[in-house]
Image (tube, rainbow, N blue to C red):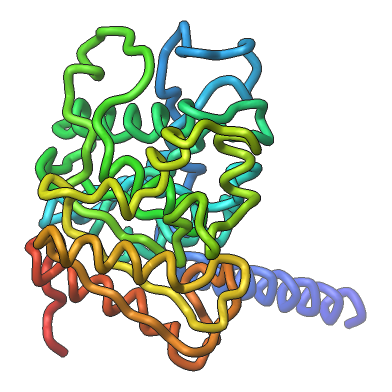
Length: 312
């Protein structure tokens, strides 16, 4: 009798284990492919002989981090420039999180891991890197399933300065003359998030200016990177947002770029929110600025760079 009871108990425990295992499998399956998603692919902007490189370490090798959208009917691609005052890169909330948000909207994203002062580099290398990134996306348009005429740039803070620089300047620096360099390097549109814009102004972010061009740059170089002065009819459409409470990068930066675009009849949209510190990325948890991602998508839809979401 004791042996029989023990056998029944063991059978019950075994059945319980199978049930628990089945529940775990169902739970994991409910998360879909994301539960097992691989790390994003990373490619070097230059396969070898990086222009201006001081060495061959990782910090000397600018890269592109690929987030192709699984469904991208619009064919739109966005090159992301994280901020960091040209002394570092805020790769989390101004890089990977933004790429994932764009993917959710059916837009392919490519994070530019560009050179900066923290890696030992200043002018002209950050701009060279993002120009190369845009060219690379266009060269690989077919493989990455994007439209080469729908390649935008999105940047935060100093990354916003970089995004506005690539929007207002022609090709810069040494080219290697390969098929990638043959591609156009200006984006089709720009999204500028609490961007640094003006250099040599009362509202300049001094750290970004110092890290990019130094404390004793010639007047011509300061003006070259004061991007509200560089806007012209070739500048692509721009979406800007900022907060009044931003003390690190004052809102005047966005306002001056907006006015310059308006002067040159460049399509432009500016949203200024009262509350919100500097560096809030997608602005989750803020009282009003959290609306900027949806406003941005609607602006992209108006210009034909995003597909309208189906009505519920």
